Image (cartoon, rainbow, N blue to C red; front, top):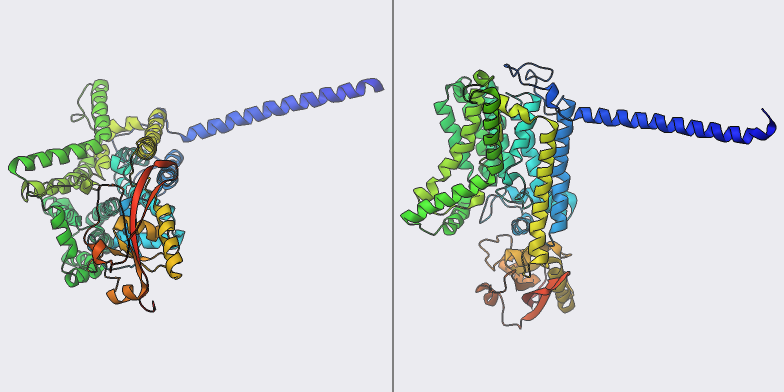
Length: 566
């Protein structure tokens, strides 16, 4: 080779090496993609046999963390969706946190054993979250999705007691199609917190009655006590458990007086602070519930109330039921027999299925006594936790039928559904806050209101703002966004705000204010009662991106009358 051809040979060698490198990289990319796709479920390599306890991931040693790589990947994506995407969407959609969260924050500033509306657990959780994450909206908006994560983990563990990992994953994904597990979870309140507590209690009840170890009864007592600290509708769950033990002989095999007594004592100890508080505060939450259900329904009204309540709950699980009906028709067409006549695992699945169906329906049926017998109205959200195990019940009822859902196209369908539900939630909030020319709590100018009140207080007094008097919503927003985090005297009522002392509030001074998301609302008599005759200030505030939508604000500053000591 001559000296003059060496540069050309070098270039050719370089080109050849680059082309070989690109071919090698392309090959490895294809291998990586293929390996990733093998993690996704494929129905071609999965079928349910006559015995649910066989296979590489059978029921011998159920684990919270799936052993099947595809199940682990899908479940991980689902939990990340709830733990990260739902809080993020809610954070971007709301200018101010929802009402129940603001109310919980007001209560959380002063941990009590009870509050005039509800038991204290929600306020305790919010107080913990704010202490960990700081006083910011994310500390509130993350709690609802995390509650669903806890519920899904508990349901996974429960389903693994009688289903293999892949059918358990189908059951969990089916459960997430409920509206109560999606568009209603960003607003953390006493209804949302019941979802994980009921899931845990039902799981522990099954473990206690089927395995019989004392530790399960003690854990069940803790969970049932927490249910009562969340909301007193836990009585419906207690009633279901008592009735189930009476009618199901299998659940009584491991029962003994000592175990039941231990469960009851532990539950009583957990709820004891609230029980003593109720006695010392004239059972305020029960009076509040009675006032909220003060309307007495006629005979026709009772039937209408039941119909409305049933329709609302049917709407919450309609996707799950429609999918079940479609699968039943398909299963019958492909097998030549009805699902009732052909169930490979019937001898094993009947008892869990009956238990889960009873856990899903009996508390709901008990709640219908409120309008039918007592003649009082119901609220749709009161049934939020009642259908938590329904997805598991359906899969345990016909595991062979639901096995067909473990394949890639159904996985993608579930992911698309969750994406649509995220879009529906964000779109509904966007419509209320951006497209519809009206004020709502989602676009309420809470930060702007706090800056207005705190700046005026500082200008006129020069001391930190310690107290607010007003509605939970308006005063709560100021307390949440203000630098000083003042305590709130709710509607000027010392009986429902025991953390405020009449002597101390006069010494420290306060701001009495009124602002509502509805312009037609007027403050109660407390506004004039808390004003010693000083002139009121007025202003109009608007959302930063919607100057046309304005909220009227009224406030009066009562300066300190003494030393605001500790």
